[in-house]
Image 1 (cartoon, rainbow, N blue to C red):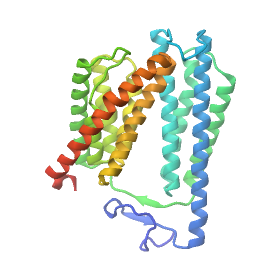
Image 2 (image 1 turned 180 degrees about the vertical axis):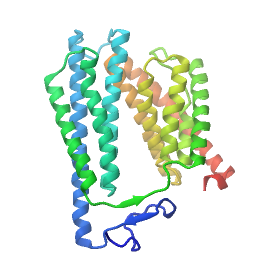
Image 3 (image 1 turned 90 degrees about the vertical axis):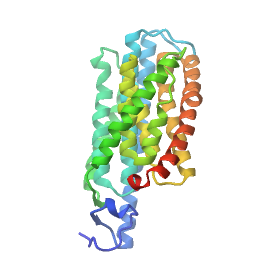
Image 4 (image 1 turned 30 degrees about the horizontal axis):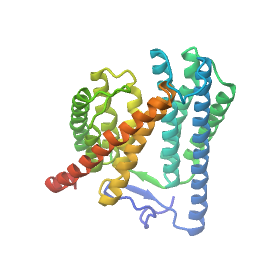
Amino acid sequence: MIDAGRTPFNNRRKKDILVVSAIDFPIEMKVNKSRWQILFATSVVAAVMEFSGALLQMSALLDWRDIKTVFDALNVSSSDKVNFALYLTLAGGCLAVILWAGATMLRGFTKRGGILTAAALLTGLLTLALPALLIYPYSSVASTLIALSLVLMAGLTYLGMKTPGVEVKERLMMKPLDIAMVAVFSALTAVVTGTTGLMLPSPTGGYTNIGDTIIFVAALLFGVRVGGLVGIIGPVVADLFVGYPRWFVTVLAHGSEGFIAGLGRNRSIAVQTILVVFGGFVMASVYFLVNVFIKGYPVAIVSYARDLFGQALVSIVLGLVLTKAAEKALPSILH
């Protein structure tokens, strides 16, 4: 074990770090960085294989229902809409977590990345098993691709736990203040999402709202943990209140949105703007992908424009303005 007292090469804030084990020798550092890069590249390959297999499986399911193209409006039963959306949500969740794991390993946090990869592996197993559980047919090519991606994930889980990396022992996952803020902002998000959603129903299904504003404020003020949890809890509660049947898509769409926006905490306004724009884009894109396979491209593209410009854009502007106002009004709580 290398002396933790020497200068660590990662630049995490000191208050978040209790113990750091760093590589001091340039040659050994270079070797380990190369290993981290290989782990990251492998995670990208696994992610691409898994999601490509999922898209092939969805195409096979549409073909089984005698739907030959998604470029026309689709006539899909209500039960198939829910089941197809659930399948795509699991596949997208696996994609997101394995890429998160790879990025974590690239930074040198290999054990943490290994744990995340294990979570992606479990999600991928559910994705592979879901068609059989729902009594749908399998695509052999799709199943093979997903199975191979799971083999890569299993290997990444093992290598992540065994590969030398930066050992960081952090404070508890969430402080009492963070837990309180999750509760407060989740409640606010649910109220704003539900009330504006009832006032702004969409002709293409679902509803338009500005609840993302609260998600962005929570994420930019308190970081990825609070932002991600608020993005999941608040909108899901609103979906259940409004009666939206595919609430689980919200977990991936708005959870990712809050997590990405939370990366902008304590950053410049330019960086925060880029991150909330990207978060809003990811949110809208998740819904767009699901809608393509359950409603067809013509309806999906209209919903996409609505989510991007009628929901995300307005929420981004409001979120940035409110965040800056809160930073000036509550400096002692935020710093």
